[in-house]
Image (cartoon, rainbow, N blue to C red):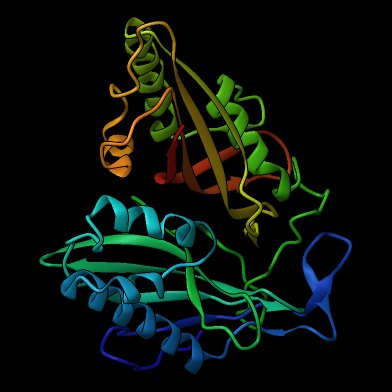
Length: 318
């Protein structure tokens, strides 16, 4: 592992590049044509650019800079965040990143991506983050695909003898389930409480409890609530762990429809939905949230979600 000084926003880098290429028998990315997703110098530049765009957005209220920050699941909620903020990004204050640890795999083709754990400093407080950055095309900018805050040590991602992280094929059948199947399994828990495949965090458990309470309250106002969760279709990113399992980053879309019956009033909706609609109402309101999750997938047994969060992506009245 190599340490080096880089931009002020990035104080130190532990570069953990990926293994040798394509897909081998155990589902890792392998093959002679694979190459590191990003160089040490370029990875530092990606983090510095992220911090720069983010800080300009939140300190100057710059919507254009805010749109430059995210892609994939994060990009899908960018416009809703602006709408909820009256056209400007959240007023959260500038950040810096300390002691980032890069997990950079060798990959074939696009998208290119790498993960990072770091300490995010805002004001006088620090919080550890686990994030994924991706580049969708050879000419596009690197953007933040997922960022989640966690407690305790970062995920234990394996490296080979050269210090390279090991990318896992989302379709591999060598684990308890395929990484690509985790979004649907996560959605099954959100919809029905089905935890046969995946063990959720307190965030999802608390959400289900609050959702059931809210549905009852809305029924008392003659509003019927129906919901369904499904994979977003954004890429699933997976890295090998030391015990042969995988750390998997993915997203889920939760779509909920609120329908007024009789004298029902859809004005009694969740606060973020009401804010998004800016007072518009109708017989039916459909809203969508994007869940982002990082889950540990073992060789055998249930997967365990380590961190997860969700944000409103859209709402429409009809």
